[in-house]
Length: 308
Ligand SMILES: [Zn+2]
Image 1: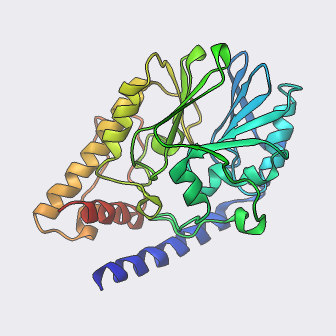
Image 2: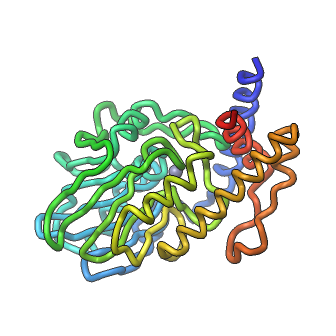
């Protein structure tokens, strides 16, 4: 009963926040190649920002690999932007996770493109469940039956290509979702981490899509430790790249939030009160203030549910 009430509350809150989001998305974010910015990380590796999650473009000897394909309607502008960087065709897409702002452009990719994700992400893309704390997701896959779904999946690790073109894919456990992939380009010492470290702010702990609050920090620490020789991190939503040291600091920040929530639960406080009592600790410089209380409360409830 209590579970159902919380769920109904989350759905109601989510509906409001989606409506607010839609209302604030002005003409400036209409899909267009011009609205996508390009950062050159290496001669054949770029970050394309705008229109959803940050995409990586990796130009290999055999074709272009894209990591994440942005919001609904942004697949074609993304392809147009890639054309300004190389004549080679897009031959592979890797999705870091299932959320619509990282996968929706999949349906606009060329026929025969190889789409790769974790087993869990492939499963979640057939469901597109509402996001914990945010609400329903747009579902382009429903409107494009059979298009844009991953055909190649992996559980813990997968290596694609070799030499300078090698890409190493890893899964270290639940965090932002239950299918978060870490995408390493070892020749360049760069790793795309999707929304496991989306920005320096309280992250979405999407329990509805297999994510976890309690495991979150542990999972990203495993990624920092388990992928050797990385200097540069491409994040899901930051305006600039970060470093493994930033990611470790972010793990500490998430762990501090979880400790705050668990102490509140132990003291018998309500989720609302625990959320209200959370403020970004001063030592985390450059981190955003806490998001709106409804979202914090949603993640408090995720952690409450995971804490015996
Ligand atoms: Zn996400």
